[in-house]
Image 1 (cartoon, rainbow, N blue to C red):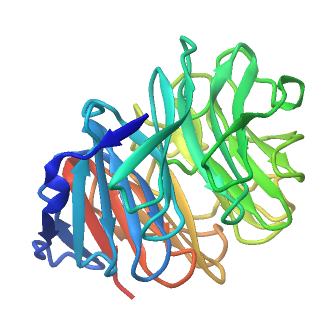
Image 2 (cartoon, rainbow, N blue to C red; image 1 turned 60 degrees about the horizontal axis):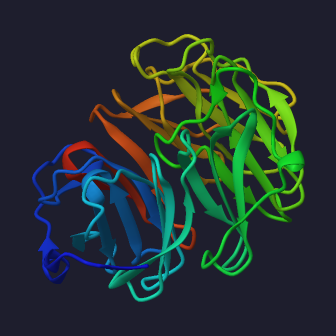
Length: 340
């Protein structure tokens, strides 16, 4: 089915700096949306998606954006997004029915390419290894994690066979806080994080067709707690972040790093300032993590964290896959570029 865009797509919003707070350059989008999906292709191209059906696209590094709402889906909350370039992108909503859309012309037209009408269907994230192979995942159907595979750039999707999908414990699911509960890595590797009554990290070595579980010491036992995001910068070193989003200032078992690929986890000497819903590898040994009470940075692979910004409710932070541009976005349509 083809979805037409609201005429607001024709308007180009030019942003004006309204905050001199270091190290963020904030811009006023003029859009009242909670942005949780962000895909930064390179130093010029990035896409945003959020609540109330809003989609955003920049082709000049965030200096200006085109915003629009997908007609007929104005109440949808888009929390999963992957962009290939300024023409092709894939989005999915958080909610039922769970749908995946594809555009090949910069968002002028969207085609629904997958629909799940199950009662508890709920997409949590999408990621790709290259321009063809990708994974989309969502909350469990029964005791099996929902898991879809594409090998044609997201134009069609097929469920991973049930017997090959990760088995969830009772009350275990995942979070669509920033779309970074799933990550793909080189040589067909992928990881998915979970939380709730149990919390763990699932790893695949064969493009998502078989999985093994690594337990994690992060806080769990509540539907609001667990791993919200993870990122590795090598086969062995990586970071998990999360906590309890209902107790965002709590600093107990909410961030850990590993030096052995997730077999064991170590608590930092200096932790983040509370719950974090997105962690992103920047370069060398540097990561950034954002959450409801600010952004923190580590330059030693997660052993020590220091404050970067006190700006609140910035839900997602992503670096360009090809380049150095770092963008962050969150509630009330806020978008910022991290300097340097």
